[in-house]
Amino acid sequence: MHYFFRENRGLGLNMHYCSFGTSGNYVTHSDAEQTVGNYSETQKLYFVGPSFAMRHAIPKFLLVPSVAFGPMFYIDRKESGTSLNEFKQACFGLNAGIAGEYRLSAKTGVGLKLSYTFGAIYFNSLHMGGERVGMDNRDISNLMLAAFLSFRTR
Image (cartoon, rainbow, N blue to C red; front, side, top):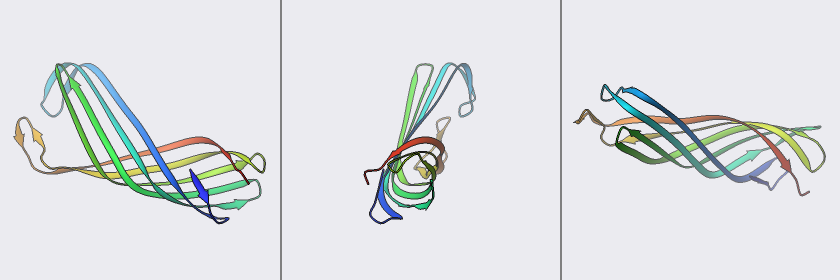
């Protein structure tokens, strides 16, 4: 959501949520090199941050690039057999996108937006097979294509 205080510049708030899941039976765990009967994993990514947008108008078409910085929250929940592990971490994230909009009228439009959200999380200590192996990091990201409707008040 953006408010354009000038014809081609605006401020707003970008929010992003995505969730990925997988599950299976008799899965071999790469960390412990053992087979488990039931396995499921869900990863969730939340981002919210203030954004800056530019607007480039061509008759009947609008191009809107935007960039946002803010907190990103990552949750990884794993269930295997009878055990449940949940890892939660927050980091500083970036959301960058570009939208193309076709104007249906002076106050409405339809379009597509391509955006990329990314950040990096760090593990203070990583355990594998009961043995501490030190610090590790993981880049978290999501590429998204979305369709949208837009409405203008003036």
